[in-house]
Structures are given as structure tokens and as C-alpha cells.
Image (cartoon, rainbow, N blue to C red):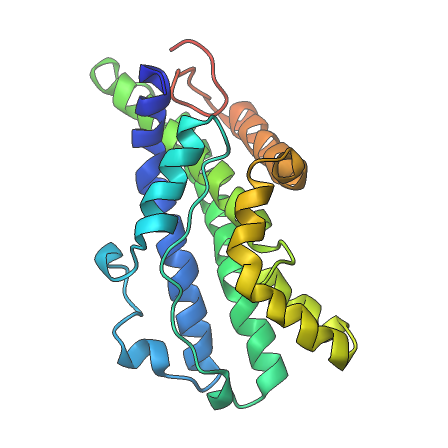
Length: 233
């Protein structure tokens, strides 16, 4: 990992941490609305990152991906839920599973708006570099959140997409499909070594580029070496 890649990781790491924590809190809050208070009782409906950090998913995986030049992805410790407490099991399971994905998409939209607002603010020479860095961070917020949404839509247990796909399968197939969850992490680690993940994330990447272009047309899109759109700064 060269110095610029390290600086980029340091810039994007807070965005990634907030995004994965928001993803898990959304699961817990959706579960609460469906009748399951497990996450609330265990103190997991909080944005305190210490409650959500997972050594592998939150620290080791993003560092490894950054080191090997892959997409900046990660995760937080899964929020515990008890589907048996849902008022309607199937409906509750789908809503809770999709809550994190919807949250990441919403955060990407918010980051796009903030990019535009930052670009519309008149540049103050003494604060120009800070303004550019903040906008770059919002740019990473768009990309990372769209990547997280797409990644979690992978139909591989225990990722969120699998909780929706299983209801589209015949009961016998769905049972066998859920058992794949025991090997889910192994499958994901294998996919990280192949070009498949880049192909899967390509629509999210293109949507991010569209967001940056929109921000650039609406106001200043500052050239910055740490921004995901690149360029000398």
C-alpha cells in the first residue's frame, strides 16, 4: 500500500465505519418496529462504534482490500434479532433484512446532496483544502454506501439478499439454500479473489460516477488526490 492509498484509506475509514454501523442499527430498529426488542435490550441500537466493531469485518477485511487495491468494503458485528418475535414472520424478516440496504442507499443520496452543497459554498482560500477534503469524504460516502448496498444484496447466506431470495424458492430448496450459510464466509472470501465482485459492484460504481457528475454540474467538484474521482489536487 503506497502513501496515497494509505491516506485515502484514512480518509474513507470514518465513512465506512459510520456506514456499517448505520446499516446494523437500521436492522435493529426495523426489528424493533416488527416486534423484536432483542437489539434494544442488548444495547445495540446505538451509533457508538465500540458496540458494533467486529475485528475481522470492521478492521482486517477493509485493510486487506485496501492493501490489495480492492473495493473498500467491510461490515460491523451483526445486530442480534429474534425473528420469532416478529408480528408477521415472513414480512418482518424481509423488512429487517432490507433495512440496512435501504439505509446505505439513503446515506449515498445524503452524501450526494452534501457534495453539491459543499461545491456551492464560495471558496475561502484559508479553508479551501478542508473544503476539498470534506467534499472528497462525501464522495467516498456515495461510493462506499452504494458498494455496501450492492454487496449485501449478494444472494449468499448470511448476507441480506439471501433472506429475500429464500422466499422465492420452493420450501425444500430454501432449507438447503439456508444451510449454505455455514460456508457463506468461505464463499465470500473466494469471491474476493476473483473478478466477480468487481462485476457485481459495477452498477454501484457507475451510479457513484453519475452522482459525482451531478455534483460537478451543480457546483465545484474539487480536484483532490484523495477523492474517488481522482485528479491532482
